Length: 491
Length: 136
Image (tube, chains in turn purple, brown):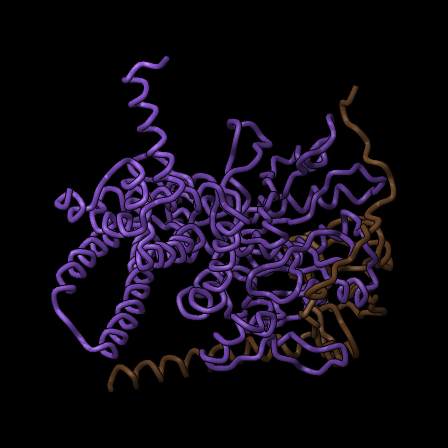
């Protein structure tokens, strides 16, 4: 025996289940029109959070990085990014051809590095960063020559930086003790790679000489010391690198093929061809040469007066590094078609700092002393877009209800619908683009960290166009026992 | 107009005054044929025992002799000279020197590496095992 109350609740549950299983289509369609504004907003924000936080199929990451690469190749690189930094940085490169030409096989002795550094000092650089690690103790009696060279830099008042090893076995010194004993500043050489491509740069690194748990990363420390006129903005997490595409003129001048014939670094064509290539044949839009100016070490070692070399070293920050086969120190960049020695990543990071006057683009947003990571920022950025699109969607529903009272020709109706559909998507696109650009200008948020919102907003617009939140509302309302107005009136 | 004229006159006078200095520079060590080290360029000049050798000593700029004949040039650009009767090698960036031959052109293939291949080996950078300092 069951009580009537139990019978009644069981009956309600059974009817709910039946409605959920076999909904009345006409009821659902009628209830759709009664979707409230808050529900539309809730569905869209819920969908956005799922997509941003869960990163389904890696879509979120892929969109970010793809957008960053395309922006570098098409917009920021060729048109927006200035050459301010490029004109103040040079890479003095030990490359295979220098080793061959000088008949100085690798690895070089300390004395050889001392000579190269001495040749650099002679041209009065602004600062020199040695991008070689001197970790292993070697049986080489020329070490005092390198120690003396560090002393000469000190005497000349030219800042000289060495880099220290990381992730070394316990007890291994990051820099040879005899070199460290000179008091030369030691930098953390870490870089950030994503799928082998250098798009970001760390803002902090190891502290080799005390001074806290974390110190500034290599490029940031050099910038802080050498460019005191630009106060370094407080940076958190990572820098988003903007890669320039206007290759240094000296690199175009130097570049020859294997037969000694001059060759261009990239095929320069108009903006239209460039855009086509960036989307459909990316490698041809990229440059084969590095962006930062190069002085081959061979040219330095000659010691002869050379206008190019003088102009590229005097008053410049020099990164002294290598491009050596088998040294595993190369990465891809968004704007180069070939692997680039990582010394160019450090150079590009400093280039960004100089060009943006100490306020580089970032992957985080700092507001009122609070730092927001990438995902919350994207969610915050999508909220105003959702509010605006939802509001316009509600207006559209009301307008449709009004419209049913009027009649139009079928052809007119079709064109109107198609026109509104296109306009609707573009509106969402430009709305997100506008908010993204505002964030980029206002808080220095990189395009990589808001580009997904642009794609997402178009998805949201499509969801609204097919009336997905309305359908969900209509269905749920129907399952919960809601009845359309005409049905209520009939009963 | 007057300012331009004045500037031109001053620049002309300055160039005229600088002429003897330039002439002296170019005629320095004119009695020495061939490649020659003219003078010291850096505050100290390091002297080496071989082109890839070790530094023997450093000589202050004012004590470094002028007009030295270059007896040999190494592939790594080191210059062989005779200082106080001893045959030594000097790094070219530390001295002002005269090169009689054609200056070698430096060109590069900057399209380094491949766009889809990478070296799958490590260069033997010093064959010794790293010595652990202070390790237990």
